[in-house]
Image 1 (cartoon, rainbow, N blue to C red):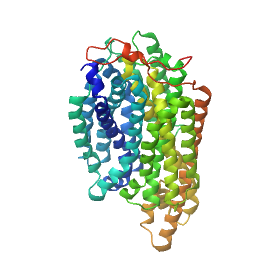
Image 2 (image 1 turned 60 degrees about the vertical axis):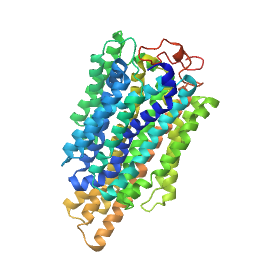
Image 3 (image 1 turned 30 degrees about the horizontal axis):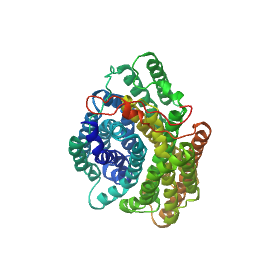
Image 4 (image 1 turned 90 degrees about the horizontal axis):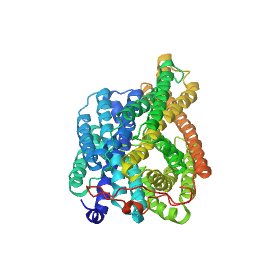
Length: 528
């Protein structure tokens, strides 16, 4: 496909890539709303639920860098098509599962597909748009990423009104098929014209290190943060990731050159995305439980209550690029982080009967902050990576999201569990020891115990559980808010001034044989 054809089709290319992106994001957020239903129908434990969510992120994050590198070598269109096929097949098989373990296995396979899809979407966009439109296209891409996360719960809620939990998996298939067919006709195939050798050593070390790290974070709350298993996994993760850095510094064609982190824009962009998704994923996971277990809403009602977030993201994200052009990347990134933290701090005022208008305020603030932050942070990462390695740059951008999200769910879930247990413990004295031990495990377990009691005892336990969870939710959001504030301060102090986006040199480079527009993006400011 020649460059003129790519230019003429650029908005259709953006539509196909955004559809593919939304499928990946919706599959995460829609599942959160389905968790209570899955817990009942699959007899899943609290640990099972966390693994159903995090197994996807675990594999996704572990494979992002090598999948992005494979896309650079063999073609990003091919990577996108392969990812969509794997994603749809795994979703179909997952819908047939009859126990939590089988769901976890096929969620992991969906993570493999997602690892090929997401890097291919962003790198395809950067190769399809001229420099003066590229920042706007990336802003639209980030807006769809955020909106997909907010739309997912509504989709799931609508399905669960009429069908069982497998419908949340099955709905993915027709949309994946649409993206697959449209992509065959519309999306160009760009790749690294140099065809560098595959970095198998880097792929194995990065996958092993990230898998060990995320496994330790997920299992830490269950087996103990100071247990030999957890400490051993952290040790393995540190050793493998350190080995990855050493390996990448020594080979002539690294999958991800660690020297990129000397670029402050790349480092700050990566950090702010990681910390914001830490807070966002953790918040979504816990808010779903609050809306359904504490406030008693149905899956559909809970999903509808997240819609203000989608609206705010869709409105703010495209306008972020306009602000960046006027004032530079740093002020917009800092403002986004601080606005997001303000939304997190509002959760400190939550009670079991918190009015929905206040909940909507929390979501709008969170979404507005994310909408401001994502476009300049994403552009800072993409602009720091040579165009021929756009797949790896996109994979790094996606990796920050998945690692941040997985760690956020694990850490914030652990904080809620500890705070809930501490808060409700004093209200369990009248229960038999076995019932009390069960009730302090989680809000769902406490309500299950209450259903076995009569009259005043049941009402008292429900009230205690609701109050304890609302308090625990506030504690976890306080932790997340502080983390995001720290990220905002880092951006304020270390993000260089100016606008970060690929410049016109992309169009001046020699086109690759398949019509891509390779080149090296350069930040537009002094000291780049």
